[in-house]
Image (tube, rainbow, N blue to C red; front, side, top):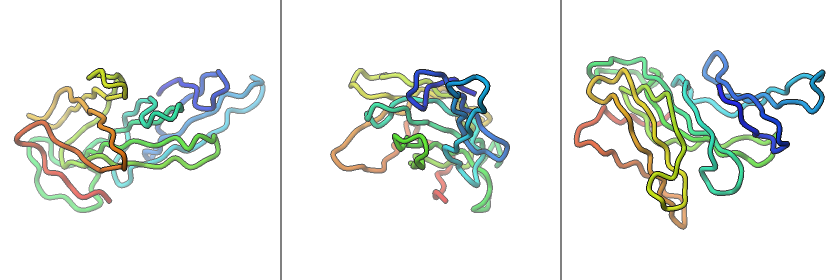
Length: 174
């Protein structure tokens, strides 16, 4: 759960993950007697979204969402999985800039073993854009803290360079 102003009205809204792994936010009304408005951000189906953090990832002035999912496959070794097996995934959701607009998902990585559940947004390398430090658990020797360095290019380029020589098997994105 996170309290963050996603509507730009200077009131803190509430973001959480609904049952079924849907990242949603509830807009705080101006009048406390009014209902909070539920709006979807996105999901990582078939993977189970559990962790998220907000930051201006694309530099356009609004808050986007970094997200991570838990793997339900083996924790000590990769093993065989089906295409619909929930795996460890990293993705971010681009804020449409309109409170009623649809958020765009950008997948980063999907691994057989990965429990990506906590993120801190910071410019870790001092280059002016936001990076993420995160935690990964229940992945045996791959547990620990990781860094997602943002590298910007003129045109979007999908790239994920692993830092370890050996890593849990990368899986196709659904």
